[in-house]
Length: 329
Ligand code: 2RA
Image (cartoon, rainbow, N blue to C red; front, side, top):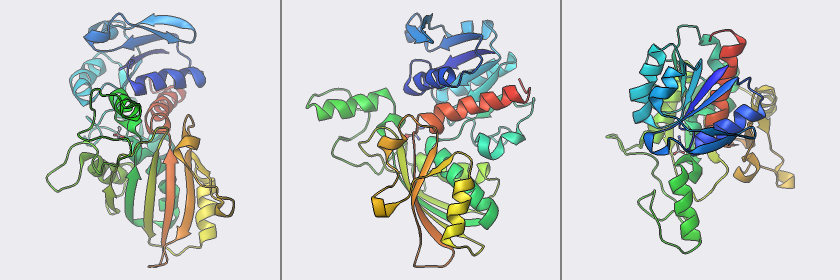
């Protein structure tokens, strides 16, 4: 399989290269693609140095799959050009996620909807992916009616500049600011831009993408997205109300049977999911599972995953694996 990674010099791009190598994705030729200012840079893949090329050269080289992680502007402009050339685009940006003509795919949940006609496939937002992986089977069995989520998101979700801001602050150095305020020793209730309803775009992504991936517009979702000075993964406090009655044991049984989930929950021994444990892993870790004692048929849980892995790179590579396995590319 000839594969292009567009945005190869970014944090997610780097993680895609790692995931392709680790999972032994059968890459016959890898094209590393980035904006003009990165063309000519050298990046290692499986022990070989590869040279970064530009967008037009990537199209001319005719890969079968292009995994984009270069921001919404690049995806809006270039994904259709790749698709017109017959290249299947798996896009990590928010550009195509809510387009009704494009599929928004988490392989464990809805890859079966993919067909040969899908030339631009959207990868959901990181904080949405980990939540729906944890909740989808519970929804199938118990029917979720309302989700209240608050996130605690890693600076790696913003990118290299944000990691540098936090590290500079930690070292007492000044440098470029990725956020409007200091992030170290601070918490920002603000991810992505504010929208007219007072929610941020990150919060609206969680609300809208969840319904699309779970194919259920009736689920009521409300979200508060928060940036914290952490690396390694995003954490989420999730309160879910269901239509059907259940016991806590059933919730554990369903979570234990959910593909992609690892239950990490033994509070007597102080065992619960943390970003430092999720870092570098592909599973979504779920713990602190308990009944909401204020109302029936409702549970609280704590969901943690590496936002650069299952939240971005791994999910995209799993989509590519599915396309290949089912001969859709
Ligand atoms: C963030 N969700 O963490 C974004 C990354 N896609 O800011």
